[in-house]
Length: 119
Image (cartoon, rainbow, N blue to C red; front, side, top):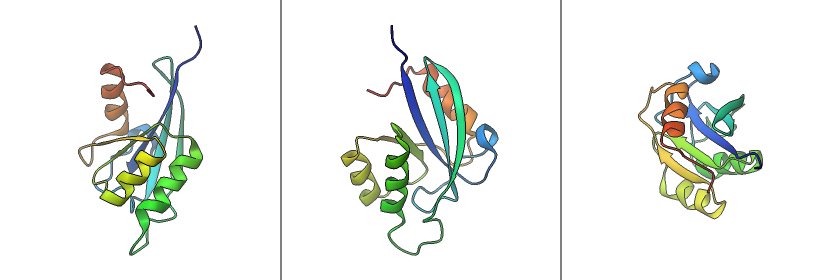
């Protein structure tokens, strides 16, 4: 049986990895915490600065491109606008909302408990 790997990107407010909190925003979030899960276990945690954090307009598409380039399967954010949502769909990146200020570790734990997969 092969490895089942999933890359989850959580829109976050800082640089604290699994201890960080979900941002109320998606396109203009400060950072994305990328959690790689393999066979139901957290394998890697990486923090990406969002180049679109200070954009007045057009932040969503830039954020989506960043996540697509990273090979993300699932995006988690507070408020994902219609433009970003459409682009995520085009890149076959599933997307869900999360309550702002929820810890990344809690979000990932809940997703794993629900049996989330990349398909």
